[in-house]
Image (tube, rainbow, N blue to C red; front, side, top):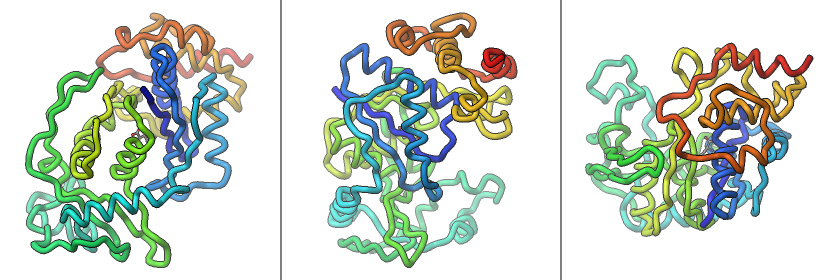
Length: 316
Ligand code: GLU
């Protein structure tokens, strides 16, 4: 059994990420799963120097450890390219150079929220190349019009139909014609989870509908078995939106720089996992030993101004 910690090195590891990584780590240590650390530096805005080291340093600061890695996704492009060749040989992908504006114009629905519309099926070319060449701004995956059913081990039974929600999604992009293209998140994560032998994927439920797309790619690539999925409710701001700048500076790095001890951050994560009714300072060991999926609330978890005050109170 093997799980992975897969931070994107955006420089903004925040309290919500800390809660998810601590939960993933504690579960793995309780159940003797191997832990792989994988830095997902593909398909993100330019990764600034030092940010990968900072991300790793913050995980260590939280008391999290791992058995393998860090593997840095961009360092090993060959498996992602091989997957593209294999999908092309099966006629399951096609190059697409349409701009977002062209796609939106082709979709019949109103413009508002247009980026949430599925890629219109009539824009799919009738003939598809049987070889992949990295020469197009993007390549899309031919999404079958069928529901994807699976059981999430935290969120329960799921049925998603990516053909209706996203349509043929992008799996490869080449933003800069002067540089090689790279896999989009959905492809990179499937290829790497499969080749690294990941059996358990634990992450925020913002990725629950991505799991359906990933299952389609597993099938298209002939990869098995599928991993077990556990999607945990995301920590949100008091406006119910995912944590972002408008909720204040919730980056771990910022709290650490203000002198907040890790025991407070862990204690708040413990409270969000239902381990204590009020936040209280907690060591990594106690969190690991007491963690349970059974106490995690199924509804959204909210970061409040009071939580922020409680964290900062410790520094004086
Ligand atoms: N790198 C992704 C993130 O930081 C996680 C992807 C995954 O767990 O599949 O949001």
